[in-house]
Amino acid sequence: MCNTIKQILKQNTRLINKKLVVKGWVKHKRKNKLKTFVIINDGSTIKNLQIIIENESKDINQDINQDINLGIFLKIKGIIVLSKGNKQQIELLAKNIKIYGMFKSKDLQQTILQPKQHSYKKLREQSYLRFRTNFFGSIMRIRHNVSYLIHKYFHTNGFYYIHTPIITNYDTECSSNLFKVTTLNFKTNDFKNDFKSDFFGENAYLTVSGQMQAEAAALGLRKIYTFGPTFRAETSNTPRHLAEFWMVEPEIAFFNLKNNMFLAEDLIKYIIKNIIRLSKYDLEILDKKNIIFKNLNKILNKEFQRIPYSKVIKILIKNGYDIKWGQDINSEHEKFLVEIYFKDPIIIFNYPIDIKPFYMRKNKDKKTVAAMDIIFPNVGEIIGGSQREERYNILLSQMKYFKLNMTILEWYLNTRRFSTVPHSGFGLGFDRLIQFITNMKNIKDVIPFPRSIKKIYT
Image (cartoon, rainbow, N blue to C red; front, side, top):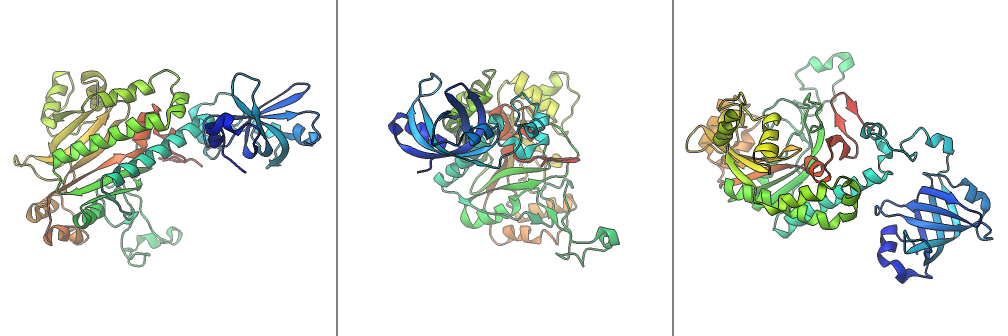
């Protein structure tokens, strides 16, 4: 039978004398007079399996033994035996070996697969090979486990998973940092038309959020979430920004801002608590300075502090920052608040109307909206959300105030017109969460194929 290395190591000595078929990429090879030792990994775990090849074995073609180089893929039939070394308990005694995709060892020297330390920038430049490195393999397994935990959390708590459109005709966040979708021919100047001859017959964009459609779904299914790619054409090239990234967006009927903050904190803590267990070995590989587990456990030990925007502004002014009430809080301010002043994650709530989108519920003071942002050390804003404005007349006035296209958003108004309820939701930046969990300095190093301004990594 064929097993993954993860399965084999889990069963360990119970497999002694069992015949197995194992497949994997060569990570290391050494040889003495009697035996050849080959270390392989198949991506199922950070741990490797050692293959023993007897140099005088009649079962093994010795030409194949000579052809085994780093990076090539092997299929090995053999028997599990007790290891005589102290680095592993079991190993596979090879009886038959097949090589897939053989290449010259000199060609390996041009790739990130050569056995040496590479910069993250260098790894990014060969993103298609990053998956074969121990470092990036660990990050991808962690990313998978976090995805699994998100789906498990929402399923366990009665949420329905909704797929919202990737192509839209409006800007949810009113930021205008949109990617246009078109079939018009730029070479023939068709793009100067009014888009009536375009595929959709109107302006179309890659979505910045699935929130609005998620709201419509929540007003029929009560508790839903969407988890998909989102796109923003921001000119920023910081370690926290991507042009294509993933968002987790729950929407819940009969939820106010307080409920929303509780759900967001509970979700994050559930993920962190369980990722420590599920990805223990992969996190240990990344945690060379003993920082990751300390950071993760610190998140679990305290309730996130909730601070109204007005109080945050007073704190910043008192500490020498040139900021006034009504201005947005930037990354410099976030860094000071969570890494120096509070030294913990915080939730900032009740923002001024003018710095938040139109759909957020207006508070009684008529100056602020029921918005909230969760700010984390190292990565900044990790969640942004609000209680949505469910009152038809107030939502209509807000749309007019922000001078929005009423025709395009008529359907959104109708979700309030035809009976509505108080409801809330938020967006969790999935990649920033992975960045925090792994303690990576650049978000481009936690996503399979990064897309950022002036650069598509393939």
